[in-house]
Image 1 (cartoon, one colour):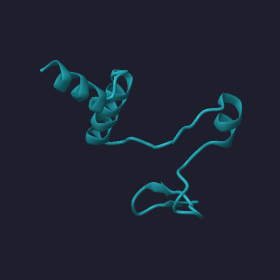
Image 2 (cartoon, helix red, strand yellow):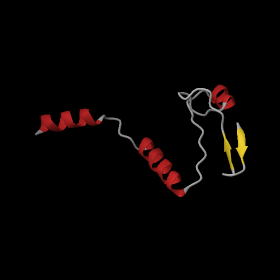
Image 3 (cartoon, one colour):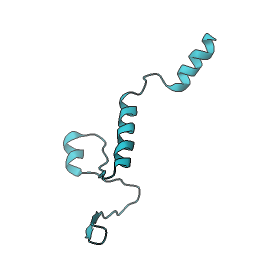
Length: 74
């Protein structure tokens, strides 16, 4: 990893393109999946907010199950 003075940002070294950014301490002590991402723009923050709210409010019944129940009722 290194600091790029032209873009004024930190460029993180990635040895494997299939691995996302993670913190080994969070992984060990909290024992859950996580993906660290710096959100600097309003557009990215809005997208993250919508993703989190959709995830929190997702239905317990899957869409295909709901459609199957609706088709039987009709």
